[in-house]
Amino acid sequence: MDHSAHTRLATTELTPAILEGATIYGADDHKVGTVSHLHGSGAAMQVVIDVGGFLGLGSKPVAVPLQHLEFMRDQGGSVHAVTSWTKDQLHNMPAHHH
Image 1 (cartoon, rainbow, N blue to C red):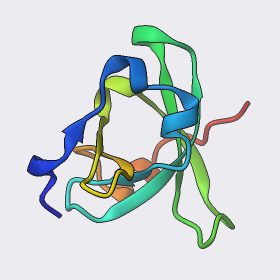
Image 2: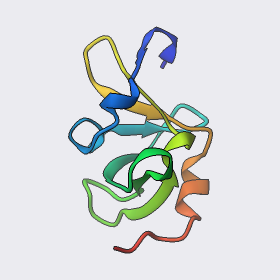
Image 3: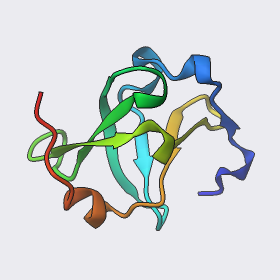
Image 4: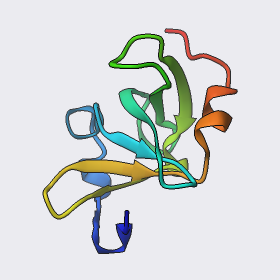
């Protein structure tokens, strides 16, 4: 997917209402997970990503710093993000627990 034509989200758009459920694409441009929820605010915000699984079953939640994700909107208005991590790298991170 060519993300160069997609519109980057403004800081004011980085809210749970906009980001939750967004697809995350990894270094190889394959889907690596979806945003479950957000923790914190500002520079300390973490994005909890559900990695792996099928239809939400068997997925592993991992928390990553917001600055490691680039959120954008495609031409159809769908929000997604890209990261330099692969699905395996995310899956090998410690599980996030509430």
